[in-house]
Length: 262
Image 1 (cartoon, one colour):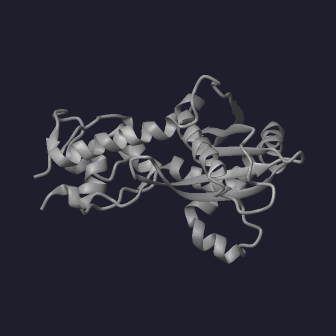
Image 2 (spheres, one colour; image 1 turned 90 degrees about the vertical axis):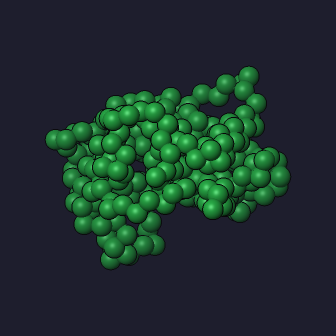
Image 3 (tube, rainbow, N blue to C red; image 1 turned 45 degrees about the vertical axis):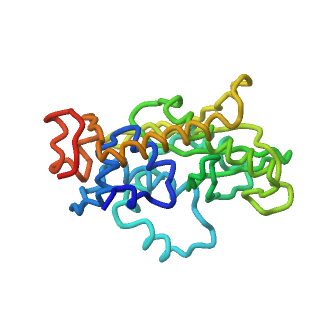
């Protein structure tokens, strides 16, 4: 059976990002569907879950529901996080998050070649003047805002197109307008527990057409189709292989040639 039959009907931004980072891992998960024992979550994944959980705490979710959704380890880190924030961190939080009316936004967007991109914008905020702000939350050891530029630009493009097509992603009065800014809230942290929260305003490049990020996704999709048709996916040995579920299967520090499924 051709692997083309294994093409997912939808593709998330994170899956396409995974293909660009390591096509071999993408193939194991999305094409070959290789059964594997899940690797334990890293400290930073737990910390990221805790950070999102705090910033996006749903006042309508009961404590019992939150504990069930978050998990014991994440809740422990959340408590540590609450004690670790300094006055300066709280100020960043107030400026970047607390001032806005907030919505989490999930979307399915169809690109010109027919690819359905699934995505989730962490926070879409509206300030007191009615301006829309797209906010992405990240956790990591070092500040690297440019790393997340593609993701924020794609979200802006999807929002832009939804407004032009009169199909706003937030169906509430006043939300059917173009965003004023893109904001990255970055929590830098590493064991032992140290936290430093920073806000980055992502500046627009006025020379860039709004549909370019969507066209980039179509280019990645075309590359994925070629890989699936040839059944060849390149490995990319990197630091993150340490936490990859498929590390033992693919031997990332062995041959780095294109690998076919057994």
